[in-house]
Length: 550
Ligand code: F6P
Image (cartoon, rainbow, N blue to C red):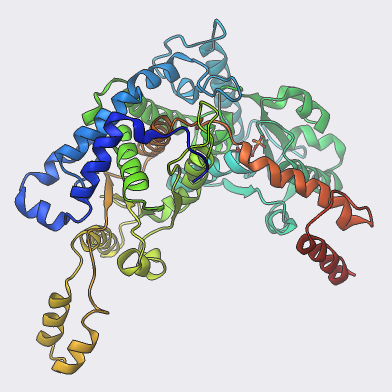
């Protein structure tokens, strides 16, 4: 599409897969299950409290063999090794990629530029423990001596989505008197709606920004600072504001004492940062012991990823299935459906993780790629989404592979709720896979007493093509450990896809152009200044906005 180089199709295993795809594209999973009673066990991996069933995919042993061959050819094991070793695999920014160091629970040395970074990592964890304990116990209090019970995370992207997703996932573990709020959008509504609910005397703002230059976060932080000063005066700021950043200079410039700053580092990407002090709101809400359990879970997945052979390696397998669908079947989107209300923000979190990491068109060799990279990721909590986009999942003209995430035990066992929820989760996977033939639809209607003509007229509408892939990710119960495992699993899956596609999964240059243009449009909206020359549509829109605002 974009050029003729960086062509994976010259790769031996890729060629085999391309040929094999022709044999597989019409193969029905129904038939595969019928022929192989062991299929569910064959394509299923259990690790601690997580079970990943990937049997409802359009694969055979041959498919998996070729995919593993592809991973070997693309040197996946070596690249995994490089990441854990601290090599600068973020090549466009010349940075190591070491979110795994943040949860390196064995504390084995990891070196960046010759320095063991574990001492710094542990020091910040200790600082987080002290601070979160002090807030929770009412030892670190607000300016007027009141306990800080409103925790407001101000950040955007990776400085928002991780903490927001994880605090929600672990809501059941929150300290009883603490409430968490998240302000990310530059839309004043986001700020206003939170500030209207809280008392400044009892509020702690955590300003999270890796760069501390992000316009949304800084604008929101300034607004909140003013709100606090208006209520309690300038001296109150140090008792109500802390920062999490890699940029001490900008933090000081903003007016937050760097004593009240929690550090993290360039080797942690924004969307991989919830394990760092960016997760401070999580630690305050659920306690540092739980935060560390989340790190333990992620570390367990890290060790599985690092040491397990590819044929039993969960993130590797999920990534290879992703490539199989994106690049051979040309399926352009994927859905994530957690059947757990507490996991409602997981799809939004994964949108950034996957699409900001792998939505790229230039390879690590500086060539335009000729194959599909990141799919579109979307999703939402089941069963809600069964009543919105599932129509298309079942009968649409696009096939959308999906991940169904479901806990066996609920935190809120009320009557039959959870059994109904789980029944739906499992039913969706089965229905997507099996479908319903036109004949089956017709017979069913006839059995239900529909007249012949009516059944004939409706049989196609009521049929389901089936053969639609899904992975089922089954947990015992959502707790900090399981959440850590789940998120680390997706991080590594994303990394492996990036390896196969030969792209840098750790930069995000595609977000810059829009930011740049907004900066040039802003003065034009505020005055008669004219910035860069715009196309006629944008020019017209600027004029119309100004007219409407008059
Ligand atoms: O959208 C681009 C981005 O840089 C994300 O990668 C990042 O998570 C977000 O902005 C916020 O950046 P920062 O933490 O530096 O404010």
